[in-house]
Image (cartoon, rainbow, N blue to C red; front, top):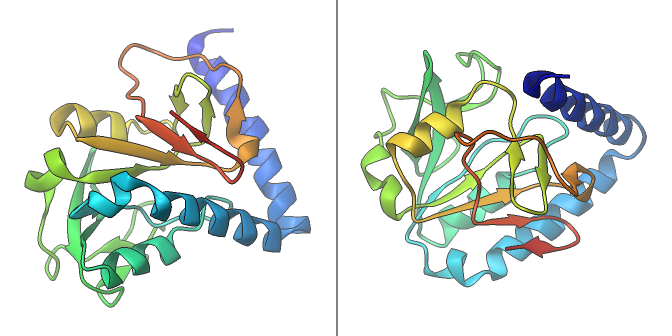
Amino acid sequence: MDLAGQKDHFRRIVASKRREYLTCAPHRLSQMSSRIVSRILELDLYRSAEVVFAYMDLPGEVQTRALIERCLSDGKKTALPRVEGKRMHFYGIDSFDHVHASRSKYHIPEPDPELCPCMDSEASHALILMPGVAFDRFLNRIGYGGGYYDRYLQLHPARTVIAAAFHFQVFDSLPHEDTDIRPQLLVTDRETIW
């Protein structure tokens, strides 16, 4: 099996587990998400961050709204990604009023670029929260296949990148490429992996 096929294999495993939780135990996803958010908020990296680039979650992902609300209430500059063609950019928000799913290619709520300032120039000192499908204990990551975060972080190297995932998204080892960008740490509902 080639590398793309190997990655798709792990995507299918995680997708099946997510469907199982969404169907049988959606409250567990909320509980696990709350634990992950609490762990992130306890990190010195979060406390010292003045700028946080977060993301809006899809069904079955770690729920990030509470974290984003906390960033805003803590007075941190907060930005969310928007996909524009093959690129992704981060736009600052001060509330959810200008974040909409209707215009998004992937139906993910995104900031309105006409009402929110682009904050890409602040990426180098931002704390970036990165989503993913699967991770391993060496912090290798399998994303959704679009390469948006890999391309973004190649163009805008960040001080710190944190990934958030449920324990069932973590494997002992994953197939990876040299161009895949790894987070500095992975926060799950059970542990933090540095």
